[in-house]
Length: 81
Image (cartoon, rainbow, N blue to C red; front, side, top):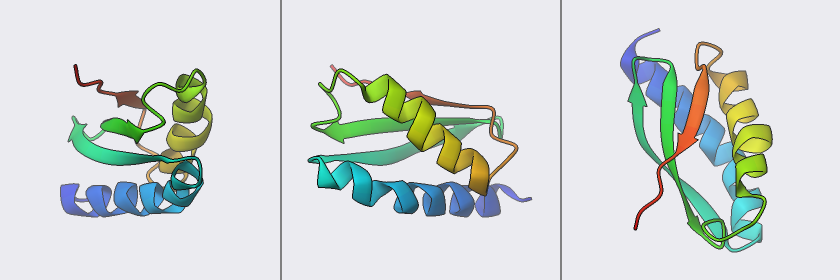
């Protein structure tokens, strides 16, 4: 899979989960894919201060991304200050 195909698959995964995040006033942005196995995202809106955002990241976002792009090993949230 090329880097462009990988990015496309990850974007498709985010589009799949985005409505659930937006329903609660949040969103997610793809920042980068490193070494073709680590996805860096940024949780936005109400997801930023949510007490369960790590659970959402691992159980929802990471699981959905791995379904679309099985070579992804981890998804990390990059917080802004």
